[in-house]
Image: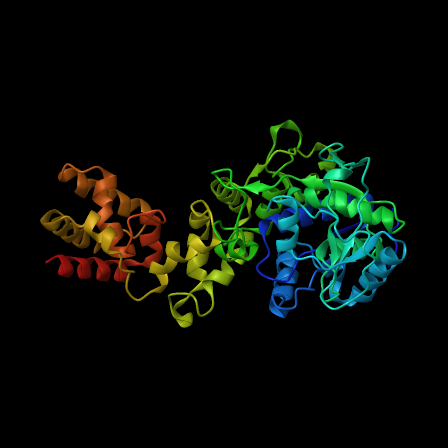
Length: 470
């Protein structure tokens, strides 16, 4: 493998067995930032040896998710595929067997439980000195030291120490000869020249075993750094079966890549000065692995959403309009393509930008402008259209709107005066008008919306609402 100018080589090693987890994304960012800071190299390794679950579409999903975050192919070496290194894995197993640091084992779990009297105890070393040779169904186990301790020097966690007599002789090759994750992961890192392994805390229990493998295979272990696990509001580890964790889902809801990068970087680390929203360049410049907090980090979707709203409001109107386009065009929009008017959208874009927290929300903000009729929301109708009072108000509004100057200011003044005559404040008076014209009780500023929609379409919708109420 090519060497880096600084000698620093880090890696991200996802499995193509599902969507790209936000935890993977956080690990990617930490590794990527270290590579950028050091002038080193980020390696993308696809751990695809689980043939039954690995699929090409998941590989593409990984590449697309990374590219969306800004980490395109020019930012990393690869993708390299673990399945291409099987011979290296086998060579390492043979080396350990030849050196007496590994041995064949034909024990099954039931036998171990019978000998130890417990389902919770690890392997008892029964086959260590039986001198078994290779036979179908026999696994290969690594012979762990009986004495001493393994110290893991971790940039985040200090020096976790593991007594060697508590580490069982673990399997490195299954009965069919295929290497297990622990062995393949170590050998891949050796062959690829990885100098720093930055990953989630859940891998920490594997680390003393992997460090022993590094040393047994004649290599200096990498620099370890185990970032805190991500937890939900109940402080449970994020689960793809229970929680929203797929990066692609957040992307499709209209979260900005800039938001996601910024927020994920803060899950375990904080910049100076109590700042939270920072440009990417500042995050890269300030981040230090040594400053990462080992405590579990709360993945707060509400806070992420608020971040996204802040990022949206910081955009120029032109940037916001461009970012909204995927939601304004295409088959998923509720309006016909020929009914969408970019000039009309440009008039309301500054108003919408102050009100959406997700780009996908733009559709329900502006759909009334491009649909032939307002969308139907029965709950909104029931709330705003209170019988004869609504009919009377809408009738007077329609009559007044027919001749008033068609500006937001004049329209607002008209409704305000008509409402006051009925003892209604503006908020109550405008509610039936809003639902009649836009179909909803909340949305863009009403009178600016009416100005853009135009007199004819506005009056048509108000008359239709009167007819429905009558």
